[in-house]
Image 1: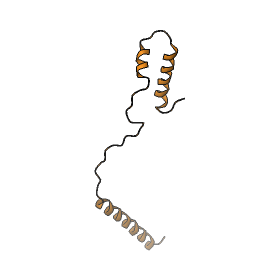
Image 2: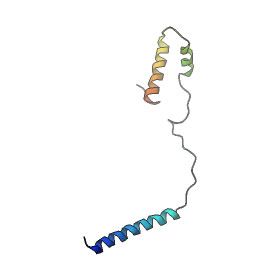
Image 3: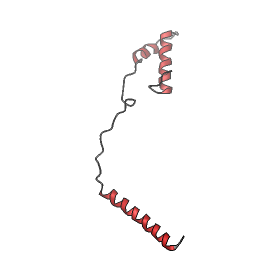
Image 4: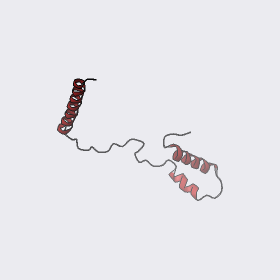
Length: 84
């Protein structure tokens, strides 16, 4: 590659950097907007919270309690929306 081509490439690269610097300094900064809550991140009550409280005190196996604990375990390990 000749010296003229290298000089032209360096000048083009320098011009590009200068253009980016000018645009970034003249662009007004937008104030931060309020955070947007995605439905998965929005707080929501647990569907089984009352049943889980009742099942915590039971010492003998019960089918409804087993089902509630399985649903809670699935929700905890696989996310809120992914149900088996």
